[in-house]
Image (cartoon, rainbow, N blue to C red; front, side, top):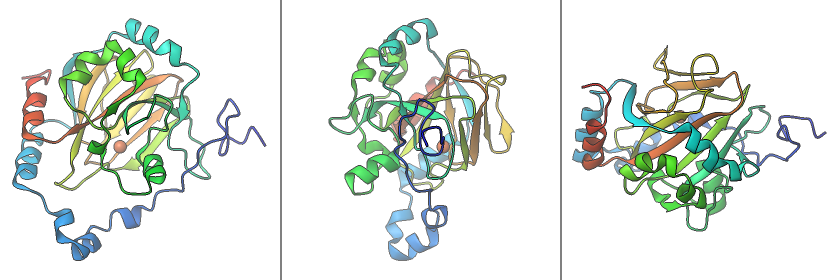
Length: 254
Ligand SMILES: [Fe+2]
């Protein structure tokens, strides 16, 4: 049945379905500690970086603004290349993506999510192992000031949520030894409260169109879209002291 939105997207394309996440296993930190204490141990640099990052709000505005007119022209040639993003078995969720930084040989059309990459690679992948810019990265000049500020960056992609697209409550990587932190830019006209909400730490934060934010995704967050074409540029920034200092340098309020 081609209109079953749990198996096909709204254009009738079959979805690359991924089983629902096993959150109980993924967050079994005590078992990971018993198996290999080093897997959950923070380094001195982790502690230094994470302590500094706590000086920022959960949703901290940065100085970067994307020119949406240019973005729209640059992304137009990719309009038929959006791939369904991390579609879970048995769940209807209209979100699509284009990849900007992936693994060797990836293009904008390669499935962007980490579980899909892990399934293809047959092994665990860290966000900072993704370090190959795609065709779209090069073409998306409107985002170069923001993208090239961090060099190198990890897995980076644009999610486009449509009406009814959502992310359930989750934490990205809550331990002190996470290898990347997240910066996101909300691009276009459908990213403010009339079209989209990002709730984190129990609060819906105001979003200014086309602005970039540091987001403390160690804390529980969830999102919903009420309109189509809500563009979110999601970047994984390697968590080094240098990058934390770079981040502190571009916060909007000081
Ligand atoms: Fe997240």
